[in-house]
Image 1 (cartoon, rainbow, N blue to C red):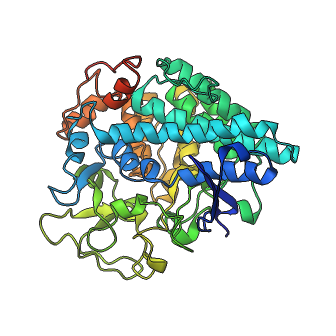
Image 2: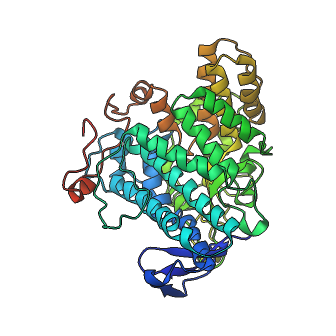
Image 3: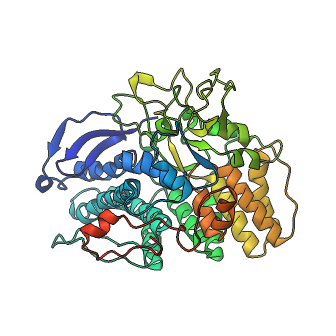
Length: 479
């Protein structure tokens, strides 16, 4: 499979890529005034959006800490004194000066800027119209995706859909609903244009299924169950299926398999320009990475007896992996005793060509299993019990578990939520699931976290951004 290839830059902000995706070294730069004049420029600018997904702010510490550490699935990991600031996210003692919060905010808006550059400038290029429309749709997909990330983390945020002619970016926050509507519009317009699949040289690009799937997820968050049902059914009819082996699903050799709806690519091939630090930050300390985001004891104990996902999700110190690696780092008592197995790359492969550890670990943004669980939740909320059970049990059966047969809506809701935890553990959804389900405080305080209802459902607006705005931006309550 070919990857996105990095090779041309707009001198100020853009990382560009060729149709082969992320494997060619930096060679040249082009001034902004000379850019956006050819079809090649349009492709390069759009590919820069993909390239930015593997940068530190979008796939390193900020992404891992914001989406993982606050949940009951994760402990800080590493040594107690290593990156001790992460404890504030683990314990909900963060404040608006936390640089990781500012990094996450900045990363999402930088990505949105890449999208707006494409949407503003590519429209006027004389080029193949079908290709142009597809590239614009890809930019809209990512803009919708990043606004959804911002909503989950901060609530209402400023909406930027263009590059202001006057250069003034200092605008107040929009409401949560307004930002949702912007994300929905972007993803809906993207879904109308994007193809269901691509040829081999473009595997990894945003598809119709990715856009529809993200819309289904947004509908679930908004409790728009009718829309979530329709959208999840549409995606279920697009040819996706569960990959038969849950463990192998996460091995880099099986990236972009039949279950993959959208994932962010990282690869150690070539010149190491295309690898993220997502896997490195979480890999087994002193063997495969830095050892952060350690699976919690509560997560380890939450799996049903016989659930194959437990051993496929958690690397335990002292175990030998199917590939023959003995997990020994962590025998030192200051190290964790559990690690994220979903980012594991075997020792024979984990540092190919001297790239970072676990560099071949893609970020799974959306999988077909989640679409089934969205479908199950929507059907249950609408009273369609038997259809809900069909979707739920497809996921359970792949995990080696027997069918659920409950017909009680409340009990089934809890079973679906439990299944989401087991299926999507350490993939960045658990904390946000608890918030949308209205039980974050109850669950997180039970495992010793200092979660305050009415405050910690969202993170603080970064103090640095409020200062830059001359207080046009307002702070979230309680910070």
